[in-house]
Amino acid sequence: MSRPRPGSLAVSACVGLLAVAWAGPVGAWPADFMEILGRDARRALPLSLARLLSEREELILERVARFPPELSALVATDLVEGRLRPGTLEALDAEAVAIASLLRSQRTNEGLVRLGALLRVAADISDPVLAAGVQGYPPGVAQEYYSFIRENLDKIKVVLNEPDALSLVREDLPRFWQGLLDRSRSQAPVIGVELFRNGRVVDHRTLDYRNPAFGVGAIAYSRAVTGIAGTWLAVWRDARGDMTRVPEPTVVRPQGARGWSDAALSREARR
Image 1 (cartoon, rainbow, N blue to C red):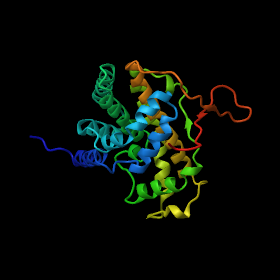
Image 2: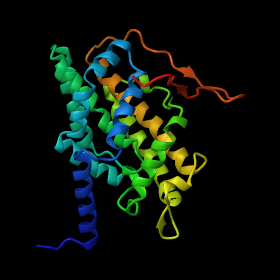
Image 3: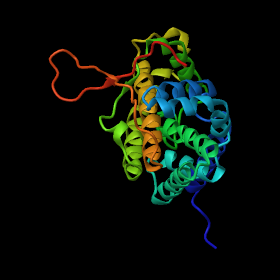
Image 4: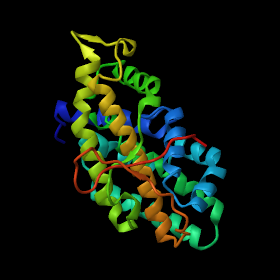
């Protein structure tokens, strides 16, 4: 029997460790971020769906923290490699189909909890920390990054940064998710550059919102909100859910800009 190359062992070990982390309650975005991301994403939904998910928030977050391990392992591997493989997309689509079937058959509570828990997929695909690849970051960098973003969260203006995110159908999700992952991967190096200098982890308290790492975090946060809302709506449409009373985002256009621009979600309160 041929022996595996040393490099393949390193990659396998990295994927295995990430799969464990992704499946557990720690994951990528900290638990309090998952809650806030979900609440921001609900403001882009039809009012009926937003209310139904809000009523089940605690159950949804419990399922997010204990996401199905088989799906966790598939997604974790793909986050390292930067490409969502056909097998992963098939498994995620099977989950979406099952959720839509539950909702159509009036198994509402189970269907809504599983629908809400899909925020884990969209949020983590949108996170540059998990998209950093096999090399990742030195120990401590991710923690400082999340602390930095948490302390500056009030400065983030949430925008829907995909023009068609709120009009997707279930069949659009593979393309949509891969686009989120591509952008996360392209921004991941900035975190390593800004939060690890001269061989040391940078204390986030020495940085302010003008640092490029904040720009990456703000974009990633909005990307996650967009991804979550778009994912929820695509599956909700497949279940033939109520699509009335959809909030109207405020269109944001820089002075002199033409064409489509980001749409901002009003953040008067997180409910």
